[in-house]
Amino acid sequence: MRITETERRVLRDEAQKAFGADSKVFLFGSRVDDALRGGDIDLLVETGKMGHAAIFEAQLRFLARVKLTLGERKIDVLVDYPDRKDRPNILRLARSQGVQL
Image 1 (cartoon, rainbow, N blue to C red):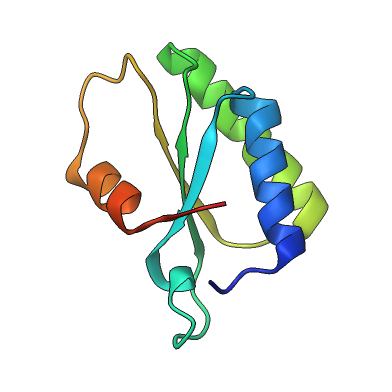
Image 2: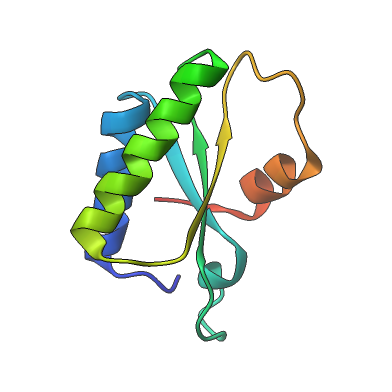
């Protein structure tokens, strides 16, 4: 996994602050493969928080706090939550190939 322990802790802690203590964060994509170089940080956050507006607000808060702490980085965040109307295949792929932080 190509993130530092500090990055891992910040991502996990800030997700729990923004999305709730029950949230889980998974790293997926190229950063999971130690043989690759570069690439953005692809995350899946699973939360019990509900409501599209609340999820959007939490996602903005999460990204702002992470960027303030870690600096400007390319971070993509997918969020899965109980009342989501559709579940694109990327959510299943991220969950199955992701590494929980």
